[in-house]
Every structure is written in structure tokens, then in C-alpha cells.
Image 1: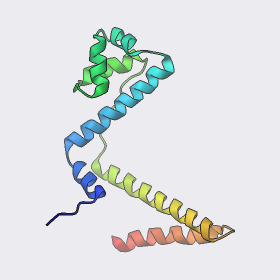
Image 2: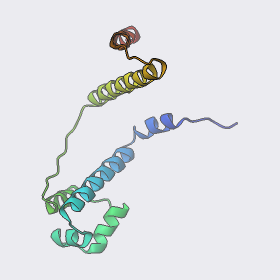
Image 3: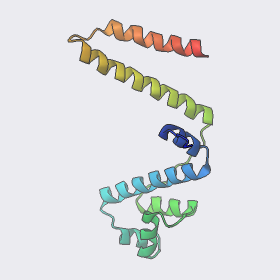
Image 4: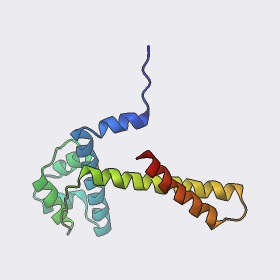
Length: 141
């Protein structure tokens, strides 16, 4: 018998593992680094010179073949005239922020649906819906 897994459930399971977060933050860091390099006109070989590494090392970093250290991240940030910023956020704060975003998405979807079904947009309908979102959360708790 074949087990059915939803994508959402697979992602939720992956989020419980450090490898997921390591990869996520590594990709985020590299994307921000690439953006800063592009804005400042810095090539990969110039970046390598600035951190006193071989250009092949930079290539490996951007391919994801290197598990770079915090020290390397700081050096790379400084090479693009920036600084690295890290913070530890309690898991509950992340959960609360996620719930808030989900509510916003639900609200946005409702606005889109209301605009499809009505030619005029009634803000009072939206207020009532928003109040009900809060009440549903209280009932679920």
C-alpha cells in the first residue's frame, strides 16, 4: 500500500531538522551576497581577492559545495562593505508570526473573492469577516 504525503506535511517535517534551516539560511546569505555584489559591480574573482581566497573557492561556495564558517560569512559580508547580522528568535515568536501571515493571506483571499462576486466593495463586510477571524481563533483556543 502506498502512503500519501502532502507537500505541506513534508515541509513541516523538514523544518524540524537542523539541515533544513542550515540550507535555508545559507541560501539566503548567498542570495543577499549576490545582490550586493551586483549592486556594487563586484565580480566573483574580485570577491575572492578581497577575502584572500582562490576564485575556485568562491565558485564552490556559490555551488553549495562548501560548508563555510561564520568567519567566512563575516569576511564575505565585509568584502561587500556590509556586516553580518544574526539573531536567535524563540520558536513561539516564529509560530505567532506565521499565524499572523496566514490570517493576512486569508484576509487577502477574501478581498479578492469579494471583488469577484460584487461590483462594489463594502468595507463593512470586510470588517465583519475580520472580526470573525478573531472570534474563530478564540473559539479554537
